[in-house]
Amino acid sequence: IDLGASSARFALGTLAEQSTIHNQQFKIDFQVIEQVPHTPLNWNGHEVWDIDFLLDFCKRALKFAKENGAESIGIDTWGVDHGFIGQDGKLIQPPICYRDHSHVAMFEKMKEHRPWLYAQTGIQHQPFNTIYQLLARKEEQPELFAPTLTLPHGFTHGGGDVASSFAYGGVDVASSFAHGGRKMVAAEFVAEG
Image 1 (cartoon, helix red, strand yellow):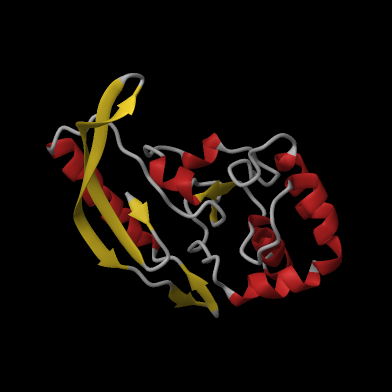
Image 2: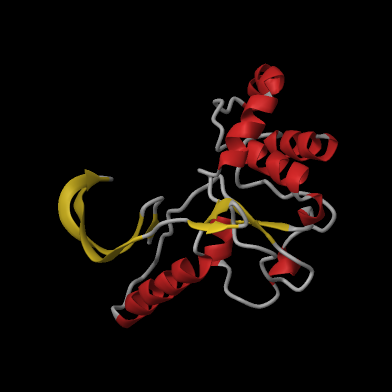
């Protein structure tokens, strides 16, 4: 499953003998099963992902995989975007798209902090980076800082009580800052922000 910025698609991959892996010849053939355009929606002046559309698309892909005997699945999505989860385990609002104007504004506000952030994380300066998104949300909607759910986790969670999978009272940005102490740096920076 590939959830891109302008389209969503899923493909069937099959292993065919061709290239060398551990002295064996293999090749992966891909057949695109479905590809559809996807455009962020306007919600309260922000660009947001059409989460219902994307979840329905993922369900179709999973149904196809099950019906065709797939042995595994993979999901490729945006590693910087996230959603906020309430105590009931449900999204509080649609996930705001990385393209949203508020991230560029926060990126500019944080200009003086960029050298320090880069020294701590090694992450290049881009307005869509999760830290600028979180700081924009904190400035505009401080009430959102409850448990968070990143999009890759949201699409792979098997149901049930999503909120119990995340720590309360803080910001879980582990998937965006997964190397070394980056999670701590981002969480502290947003908390102090």
